[in-house]
Amino acid sequence: KLTKMSPACGRVGRQNQVIKPAVEGTVSILEGCLKSKTVRRVVITSSASAVAFSGRPDLQVMDESLWSDVDYCRKLDVPGASYFISKTLAEKAALDFSEAHPPLEVVTLLPSSVLGPFLTPNFPPSFLTTMALVL
Image 1 (cartoon, one colour):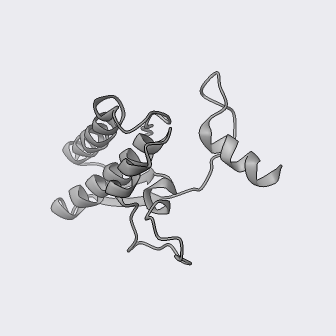
Image 2 (tube, rainbow, N blue to C red):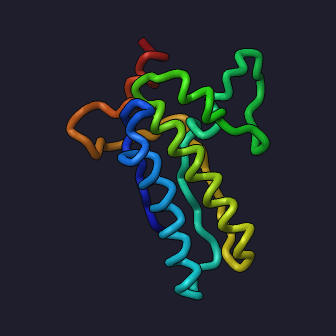
């Protein structure tokens, strides 16, 4: 199992610090898997952020045909927007890579929140979002 994380904060202007490393890191891991000739399937834990920000308030169902609208996310200019974009573009890059290299199957999971010990000294944004629903 390979894990790659996107930095979870930052406004859109942080393209080189958040978005670019997420996309390039994802592709680099997939290239390594393909090169190994022993990995057949890669499961990527993406994020609901990759589909949740379409700018369509009437949307009832989110499925594999829906993506977050990158232009809409750029216009949001809120903390976390670069994370939404990075997850969307990294997942698209992973699926494109898989299509271009058929021996390697890519499966993505899009949890709306992840529970467990924090990897950072501060509360992660997903925790704050989840708690806002409860409190």
